[in-house]
Image (cartoon, rainbow, N blue to C red):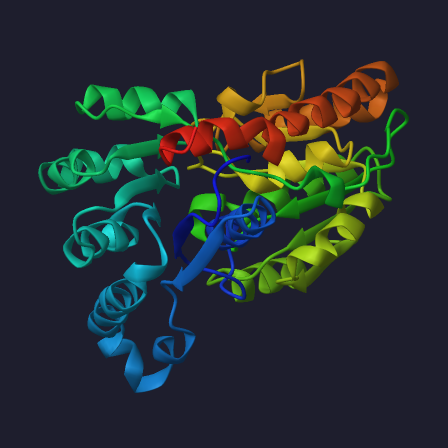
Length: 351
């Protein structure tokens, strides 16, 4: 960005090693803003030491106090406050930031996650006044923007940023039955469905494999299910750092997503950048990203038969696989820093 000098921006949200796409996004944004010549203050909303043992009971209060204190202590360093919030307790940073920041600062909020419909239906009376006090509210997808408009909140569409150059593209056509799944092992992502899909695919391709990257509350149940069902070819390496994911994608030939709630998952964009044909549920705003038959194949949430059929279709159709592989890379290039930066700087009042 030219002419911005050393404008200060505070990025408020979780940062690695906190797992999840929001932490990756905060780190990616901070890095690109620094490269663009802005002075960046990273305000981490995560307190790992307070998530364990007896301290967990105090975590909510300590988190609010620590966030407010960090905002107040650093406010001379920045004039733009960019808060990354989500639903339920993830909305807390949006509230605390408003209370902690003084006048004369531009306040911008990006809303993450796919649970906004349920959250706004229950807590909209509280969230709407908070959101209206922000100078700019950024949504990641058109579906989310329409939802906020229904609640009387004007938004700007500024999607996630993906460093596409980190993900080498490999064009796929004749696919091997090597599937990869990258999400948290939590109920909303339905990891058990991925095992069901694998079992159906192995009925036709016994050599099929599935690598499931991530961790979470359902990991013990997944390990038990693999053992009890005697499923072959399942790899559960646990949570991996972001820098390890390109190699994981490169080793696979198909990306599988089974989520029931979603907005703009980074893993789908990253997989597409690597040339992996995508098979996904049509959860939430995923159809804003994946057009069925154009840059991926979609199936209803929980329909493992349809998901498995989509995988088998790609394995049997090299022409379709090649088309989706190339289209995935083109889709990912819509989320590069150069594509997103103009809208972001305009939201900052720096355009």
